[in-house]
Image: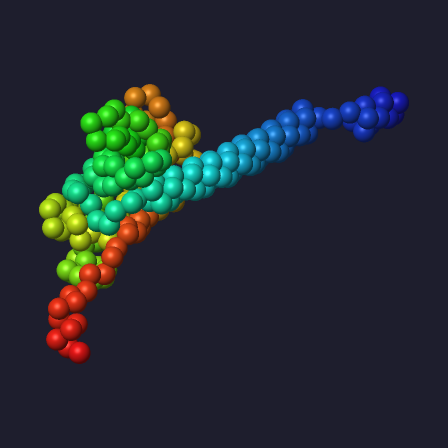
Length: 217
């Protein structure tokens, strides 16, 4: 009888092996769930940080394009290709010819005064494609969009539609990228890219035929 009482007391004050194993298993499940939750939260925070960087970078690119467009000092273009065009700019002083081009290997948009050296004014940009909005003769209304222009069509260009990708360094989230984003790991530099589009207006002067106006009167 005494032995039974001692055995019962030992069972009440301790744990069986099965109970210990179940407790360990439950603790492991809880720790695993907490670890996965923490990892998901960290990934989500990292993704929001990348989104913020992309917004800032894209706004900087758009501002650079706006400043460049504000320097245009003559209507139309001299020529325009898929990612290269020539126009008149007046950054300071006289109105002169400038070339603008995409340097794909450096992911830069560069400009130069005609005959000078190219310098970068926009970084982290790629896949630039330009479409040229050409007006009718004597008006400023876009009649057609062309992939390249020269001579008279270049002079009648009133809009540049710029399609490009803006990049920030980073890794894609494990759950995939949104539409319009892509990941590039070229040259051992992990970059996330987002496609964007911008329309740049050029100065335009409506030319009226004074002779015809006089006849109409």
